[in-house]
Image 1 (cartoon, rainbow, N blue to C red):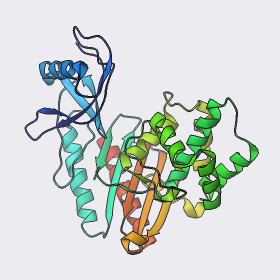
Image 2: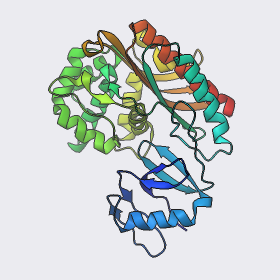
Image 3: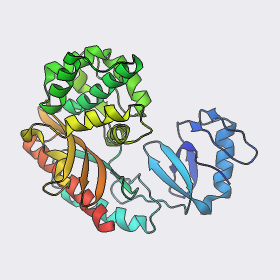
Length: 336
């Protein structure tokens, strides 16, 4: 038998396994010692042979480019219109994902702009992604990333945040203050500092903005869920205290900024959220509107990210983000 391994794999239309760029970490297979290679070495080869042998007994959770293999039943789910890259151990997964993707497609058919969503239900392990190839500017959601990078830096220096750092972090997240964010950007070392922190947080599809343009950092919905995972997982490089601190700031955003993925919960739900909005000159003044957060409601805990761009107005973008958030989490609730 083989233990959990991480490998960048894609499932082709014929159901075959193909290697894409990635790294095999601690692959444990018969006759193969644990090790790491770049996707073309002996560990990758051995893992592929093992997967071929155990194909009938493997399920893959697809998160971005990487796949974690677990003993179960191999399944492939590609929904019409948009690729669904999240898979779960729940029997009949496609029966849940395909109708949901069709529902999102139908809604977005009449919505100018592009939208992507990634969600992970921490209560059940189910996950779902829509339009995973979309990359947008982060706008102000990157402020969460910056505060996390600052905390990681402080941890490495074996200290807490200074008074001004705490004030800047609170202003950047709670009221989305741009001057505070620029100060944080400088404090973490700008683009290179954010990139270094993001490697530790496990992000793969986020490119920091050049110079002082932190808002032009680009990202994917899946990467934002990875960032949220670093705020909720005990395996995070951030301490439990620092994770609670950031979630506390996100739970206290100004009321007028508490829209977005928070709409996926009912009134009174426990929500930690950060939103970003920006009219972009390169898009002819059309709006980028993003929302990320943790939502606790109806006995469930969701990590959810919705990114979007090219909306005719900020209001139109907010409406689309909230509608897609509700569609996805309602489907997860109905799935059980």
